[in-house]
Image (cartoon, rainbow, N blue to C red; front, side):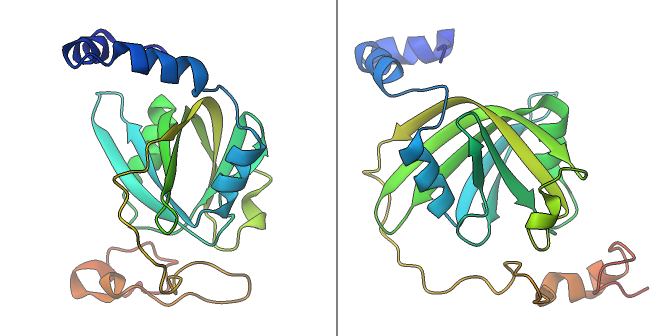
Amino acid sequence: MEFTADQRALQDRFDSRRIADRINQLLVADRLDADDAAFIESRDMFFLSTVDASGQPTCSYKGGAPGFVRVLDERTLAFPSYDGNGMFLSLGNASETAKVGLLFIDLEHPNRMRVHGEATVSADDPLLDTWPGAILVVRVSVTDVFPNCPRYIHRWQKVAESPFVPHAGVAPPIPGWKQAEWACDALPHDDPAYRP
């Protein structure tokens, strides 16, 4: 990973250049190993950061059943895009610039990992039908993988899976916001909540 001039300036200001270089040398990889893959595939959520061509960033939460993010090989992972609010901020950005950052967190046993890469978004990916409810597939070519210090992760316990997580043969409930008067007539015509 290459540090920018401003990153270096802050490292120098706080005397952290040596540890930054050591972490970069010892812990940052350009591929996923077996432990990385196991951690990623055990997660039921992650945060996705993207940036558009003008430099405007966005960050979104992505959730599903454990294993919804798949490690296809040491340099490639894939995940589904499910029905959302229809704005396509993250996936539009990924299509436009390809640059993505993924943050995987274990809130029950504090642990986290960052993955940087270049993404493609496809409605024709051969994996599409392997995820119930998927409308697109995002593939990420990994450029950087590294652990993050877990000390500030608050410990949480999972109470229940969201009822909106897609499962084969189970129709998910309709989100309340889609049934709101302001939204129902503006939804895609094939949406179950659409009301003209």
